[in-house]
Length: 322
Image (tube, rainbow, N blue to C red; front, side, top):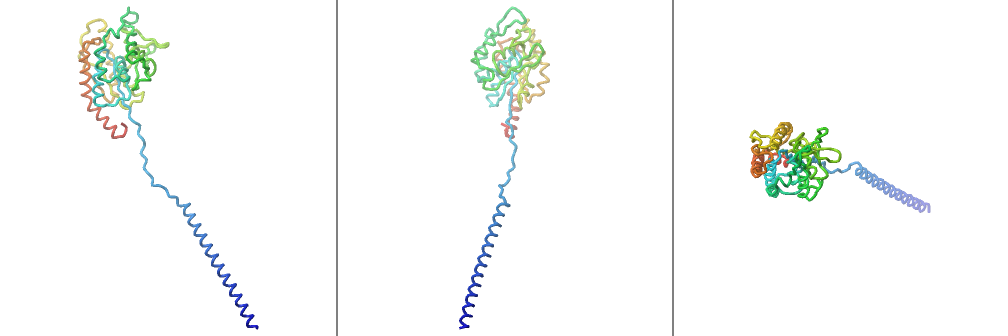
């Protein structure tokens, strides 16, 4: 009987020990699982996977190429020849800044009249279409016809609506300041830019009077720079050692003024990237009969400058700026 009781007690004791042992093993396993889970969670939190770093190259601003067309009266037909060569060789033009006759050609081209169509227009226009002689009252020519001709050709398109950004340079006569017209009436701005002192009457715009931009900026290189140009291609038609003797009073005045313009232009031309100099000294300042020669001289001069222009374009392309 006692042995039976002892046997039951031992059985209960061993059963209890087994139960405790099982619970201990279970608890130990649970703790192990929790610790492993926490370890992996911590590992995920601490060791953040980052993508491989990429070297960022700075974005270069696209280069802006400006064409600065200078003063020179009827010698300005040479600008058409220059444009023909630039257009044929796909030289990009992002801005045109013109003084005097340069503003006339520049406005037409900026409007969208191609160089070859501009040549046709050059052969069609006559002095009577743009010159309105008047009794000398601060000038022989009123300039109204020129303004009307420009606006009619451009269908009254204001400057800011032209296809290529365009700026006309004039001189405020009261203080001698250079004025850049980049908005408003295109014909009026061109007229102001072309109003050669003593030949054209000054142009009144609002409460100010303006004369030819060549008085202060015969070839507007500096204006083009201020307007954001990185590269300036300047066309100088005022400088020449082959000037013909003037044949009349107006020709004498014009030639004298262009000699002055030539001296003024030298400083700005030194700051241009490329200078194109058509040989038009033999063409009179009011001589429309040699417009074909002027266009040819513009073509020749542009062809001479073309290798330098193409070198600049190739460099800009390599830099990713064109």
